[in-house]
Amino acid sequence: MKYKRILLKLSGEALMGDRQYGIDPVRLAEYAAEIKKIHEQGIEIAIVIGGGNIFRGVAGASNGMDRVQGDYMGMLATVINGMALQGALEDKGMLTRLQTALKIEAIAEPYIKRRAVRHLEKGRIVIFGAGTGNPYFTTDTAAVLRGVEIHADVILKGTRVDGVYDSDPEKNAGAIKFDTISFDDVLKKGLNVMDTTAFTLSQENKLPIVIFDMNKIGNLEKICAGENIGTVVNI
Ligand SMILES: Nc1ncnc2c1ncn2[C@@H]1O[C@H](COP(=O)(O)OP(=O)(O)OP(=O)(O)O)[C@@H](O)[C@H]1O
Ligand SMILES: O=c1ccn([C@@H]2O[C@H](COP(=O)(O)O)[C@@H](O)[C@H]2O)c(=O)[nH]1
Image 1 (cartoon, rainbow, N blue to C red):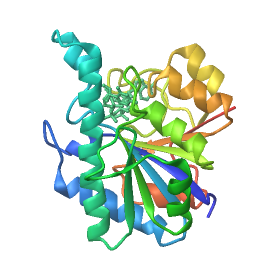
Image 2 (spheres, rainbow, N blue to C red):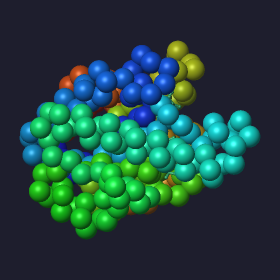
Image 3 (cartoon, rainbow, N blue to C red):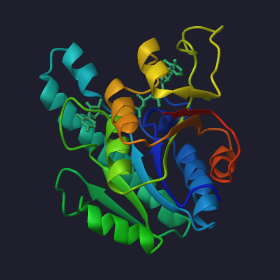
């Protein structure tokens, strides 16, 4: 396997499947099955999951809500997704721990880096909920932050697009995909597949990011085996 320890970022929106809102149990089970394939190969897996299928602070603010209030709601949304994913992984026999950046001790451990690493070493899948615990951030940034903290070998951003394009492929059918691209170029060209803070933090810490289509069965396993899938963003 190419990687020993990965930080997998899953999109909250992708969890909706074909629904308009919330969590599609079929999609959730598919993700759990994909994760099981790489877990069985001994890869240490930490996961950050988004909350866009439930709530985003920016959307709340555009409807007149206080941004910070909305961001905390968004962070709680990621905890709900984390709990759902935890259930789906445990259904398939994997051991997991959910750690949250905001304390909700009845349902999750508080985030403690050393404990997270210990869980990984013991083969438990660690899900990090509530993003960074701070408003005005995103779960993409949280993924990179946690990835740097736990010394992950790579950030694997599993999403609904199959890589980084020269413009948003959901808006421009003629967009051209990159197989590899540097952090400098992503930032210079203003490519919004992840937010700037996430890319900058990854760049500063020399942590590569692979952006790939998580909805294509087998992709996650192939990437871990060293196949060139999606787009690699590197220094
Ligand atoms: N240059 C680009 N190349 C690829 N995707 C792009 C680009 N610019 C914008 N995007 C958009 O980036 C998004 C990435 O999807 P994703 O669902 O991971 O977003 P997200 O905000 O991280 O999700 P969530 O908040 O639900 O976790 C896609 O909607 C895609 O259209
Ligand atoms: O560190 C963080 C992470 C997230 N938020 C809020 O949660 C939502 C959902 O996260 P996505 O990354 O958009 O899926 C986000 O829009 C923020 O409102 C946060 O405040 N801080």
